[in-house]
Image (cartoon, rainbow, N blue to C red; front, side):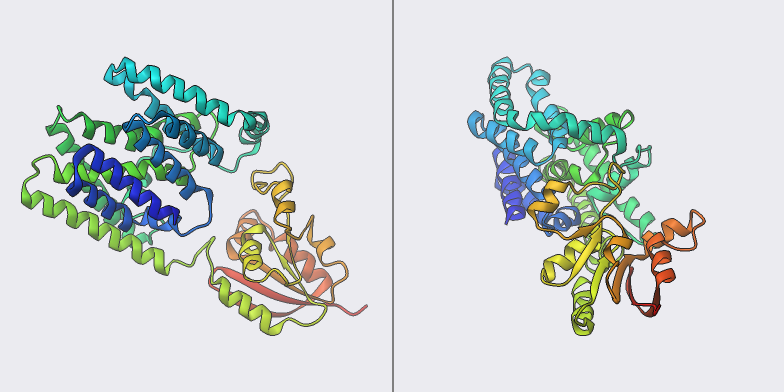
Amino acid sequence: MLSLGIVLCIHQIANHLFGPPTALTAALLSAILPFQIHYGQEVRMYVFLTFWLSLATLTFLKRQWIPFSIAAALAQYTHNLAAFYLIPLALTPIFQRDWKTLRSLTAAGFAALIIYSPWLTQLPAQLSKVTSSFWIEKPGLEKIFTLFLLYLPHLPLPNNLLLPGLLLATLTIALASFQTYRMPKEKSGLWLAYLSFTPPLLLWLASQISPLYVERALLPSHAIFCIWLAWAFTKTKCPAPIQVFAFALIFISAGIGFSQHVIYKGFPYAPYPALHQSLTDRLKQGDIIVHSSKLTYLPSFYFNRSLPQFFIIDPPGSSTDTLSPATRNILHLEYQKDIETAATSASRVWYIIFKQSIDEFTAQGFQSHPDIEYLNDHFTLASTEILDDIRLYLYLRKEP
């Protein structure tokens, strides 16, 4: 529902700036481009983030300052990286030399800060986590190319489609940029391009100091990107052949990305319904299910909370330690600190792990994942089932 709300916000922003035809085009682009589709289908914070920031943008344009304050505060509550969108948005009146709007926006910003203030006590701990052991690596210049790919065909793509996808995305963005350049007096178009690419740039620059570059957090900028493309190819006196060519590029990109979105089953995705069915059919009284991490546990927990299953928590303070104890307790998740504790009294253990997790340890010179090595030493491997990138092992305890 929220993803539909995002489409509506995009339509309303474009309609406010350019009228119904461009608004319908922008809404259509946001509905078909895979970046929006992907995260619109996931129960994660990114669709909330995009909705609140899209709403903040709309209320900013309409000078509705109370709704703006609420939307901006809720966006910041949703994800701290909302600031990388809100800062460029707040700088708009300065660039436009609109001092009256700047005064109103400043007051609205203070109101948003007051609404957000209860969470400020949590920021030091969050910042400490980010600076000491966040899982993101420092981004390089390759993020320019991945941004283009994210915005149009989306990622991941198989190797044989990476170059065609990048070519389609680059041509599309180049054409839209050229149309923006041709219309220097159309400040709204330039402003849309600014909000499409400045937040990623700011996030990239900040990540050179402390890595924060989470590409999913760029979804709000992508929503504005959809409006920018719609404007560039409907409101800039774009020649009809170029217009047709540009929309063909966009639709081909969307088709490539959507097809991959439908068929991709690699890490961290997997056929969880089939996994759940396999376990349910073969589980016996006294069996336990151990997940190597939260990545496979959470979908299994969603399908059936009654199964006797646990996951091994990430080492406290490590870069993968991203599920807080409070969250684990609120959701009533079952977990253990290590495989020894999880399997201590079990006679049969179903062990679930991603192949990528095994590969990470074998690449470091280990024979296998440490959990598997422990199980091999104390149990007998009875069966192995491969479900795309998931490995499902059944271990029987060795007789004394």
